[in-house]
Image 1: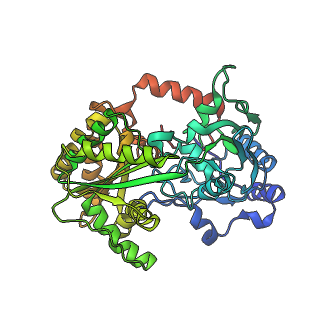
Image 2 (image 1 turned 90 degrees about the vertical axis):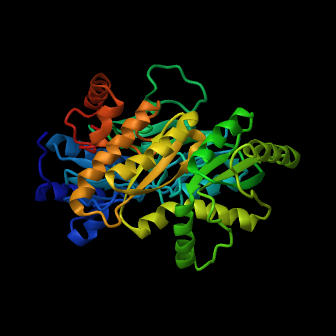
Image 3 (image 1 turned 45 degrees about the vertical axis):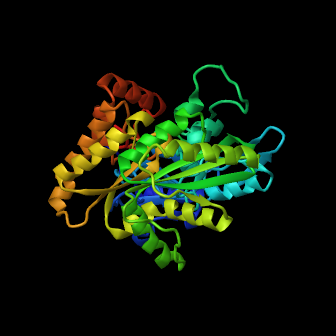
Length: 471
């Protein structure tokens, strides 16, 4: 599809909408909006606009729709699939001024927020009132809540509490034509027509720009127990996960990481935070599970912890570490949460996140390592294996540019084929963006893709909104 360029006359009109200060044309100031955390990709937009309210977003989109100028919505820039990259240049609309928590309704356990609110800021605000917003992506200290909705983010607590879409009741959305709609109602049950709210969740900013979000909340669990379970092999750790759930135990977190990832993270944490990690990682253990249990009754939690230990004893497990202080719990979570930045600090990576039924995790992890050997790359694996979601960071290390862009991509395609053959799919929470777009036919038939293209056409007749993503 051919798009129009941003003309000087359009820039003048943009300035009239958002003000000169928030209409960025200087190349150096535009550059930070050209990339996210996806490899080393960069696409410089023609102009960056930073609106302050829904009306300004609407007026911008009406103008871009009229002139067929491409628009890329942008949150915190923490994405790993290229979903916020302006691949067709044009206009970037940054939501960084949408930072208000508009209302926390303690009686109905709901909150209305703008999309530029930092996820952790929102979590802390509701926690102060004894309420709980569970989705907790690793980037929660910097990612925008609107980006979480657009990518349907998850995190460690998704295994018990669900992902972002499970907490979205209603959305104010500006359509690519500039029209403003609410997608649903602020109620817990709704069978009134198509579920546009859920359609928007995970749509990666291709159908509309979210300007307000109504979330449902929960009561905050007061107590947690945390166990570090070491295993001789990756496959043994993966087998143990299914048995823990089979025993009727419902962890609030079930995180997996390899020893290699842990070791890289120890040095990274010492360098970045100036704190030496004291948790031991014996050489004869290849993999670790971080198992968290939460609730409000100490006796119940301790009994569940004992049941977890009884279950894993039938596997090749090492000495179990019971985190009995808040400081030790914090250290273990710091290790897990910093694996991704630590690996990315080590070298350039291709970050993938596949998901399979839990029982098929052993075959998946073994298969990934075999594919890496065949195609000449190393990988560090970690993730939310309690819900089958494995993150795979393929390491560039000494791989030449040609192989990195051809042979390694072929190997990643083989990982996706293996994943689908095991009943899984391409992404659990990163989204498709541009990084996984070439692989979509592995998971989706042409009929599926055409249905999605048809939906996109209804919402966005000229195809201006976040073009080049997913399809």
